[in-house]
Length: 352
Image 1 (spheres, rainbow, N blue to C red):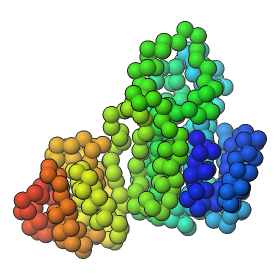
Image 2: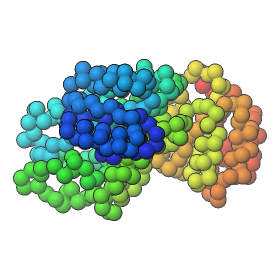
Image 3: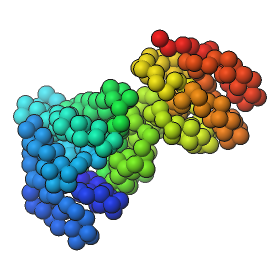
């Protein structure tokens, strides 16, 4: 997965710092990338150690002069009966899958704020489904999933994005080296296996590269699943949440054109009120629209552009599309727009 991601980033035009505990693998990947004309830094280190995480970020910045994206792809899994798991395996699982991404992000955030960059964390479908014989792995991936959301909220008013990809089973080095415990019940594992087989590694790598790039500069707090049929929905709170800014209108249009219900917040551009204050109302609005959180979009636009945005959205609405609008500034404007035949108006509220 890490190698495929490095190649996807390289194809997209990025300089790549390859980090892995496997020195031979790092060297081989670096050589292949350079053969394709990609500027590459090879950095072999054990990310289960905090100082090594900080050193990896420092090495990349020293080599390339800047940092535009951090992709946390490294991971390990130990399959065993929970009561038989060794303490060293448990601690290593959490260190690599949860602590290392945090320390890497901690070191990278100051640089990413300067470049308006992005973090992409690779979690797992195991973050949403309790998988037998993998309690520590599931806990770590669930923790990383919610850490991604927490950081996205903490830095929502800053020029940095935090997203995650949660793939299902893939033919990676991790999967190929898993040792099952004695007496394993494969019927349990089959219950959450992808109905379409294994997820394609290259497809996930391209998704990571896309989220890391400026092509997706408006999206934060998203956890995208890629499970080949083992999950029925994109399971994450807040669904498609987009930062305030010039891209809010186009993103809203894309959501409506895709047939998703939309909750639109119109706010003052200089408002300091935290978006968290709107979360309960947003969830309630999604429910009023008859949608699940994983099948609705949430966008924020500057209140001065609300009339223009809605004027573009209404013609783009597909049959059955619904929009709920909340305004912190111009309730009269929203009430007027709500009289449009296909526009749903919910109770308005005012942020402190």
